[in-house]
Length: 270
Image (cartoon, rainbow, N blue to C red; front, side, top):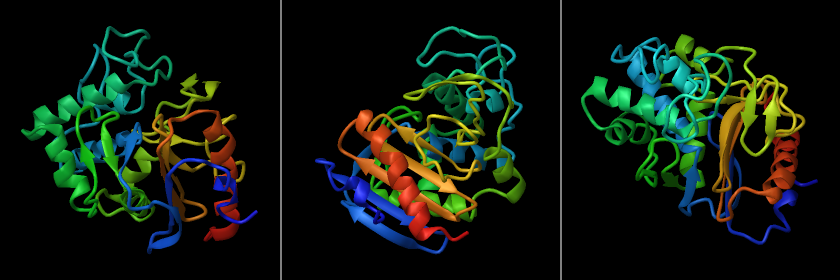
């Protein structure tokens, strides 16, 4: 299989950028077109929150969200709050409940501590420093960004060779936080070990999954219901940004793992 053969029969606009830490490795489609990112937005919001932690303005163990929860719980989807606004549906730290609301609560806490609205903070600390000129967050910090695959790949390069976070904090963010929690991975069902870091989904040994069979268990990233993803494989030393015009569905279940395996086979730096 050639790198992008899995996309040959897709009848929809997409933009794909494969990158290593030094620059673009391969591209396909409309890489400069602005598409909706949906939940891939969470990667920008998590990074902006962690910059505030690095600067000493926010603590991961600051109380935030429901009683007993912290910023750490909110970023790791372990606070027990539901997908959308509402009362907690699980005790804090008991299971992994994927939640837009939890990310929004974390963003509210950051905004209060840094003294500006969260979108402005994300622009100042992540979007502008990384040169992501097409990226806009117009609404929820959990799902309202849009931008090009080229700019999403810039985020991927940052996550391959971090400059915004120190090594210790970055390692904590991209390793499993609160190990052993079960929960539902949206689109892929219940996972006995539904592993997450601090805003980053950890691939580990989840099955089924939206990355490839050959993806390292250390792979981290996020996908979005708009038909979007960014994965970062630190063992292959590659990241791939995918954006498209069709919402997530069976086509993505079928295509994304094949595409990922082809990219890793062709371009891995391991």
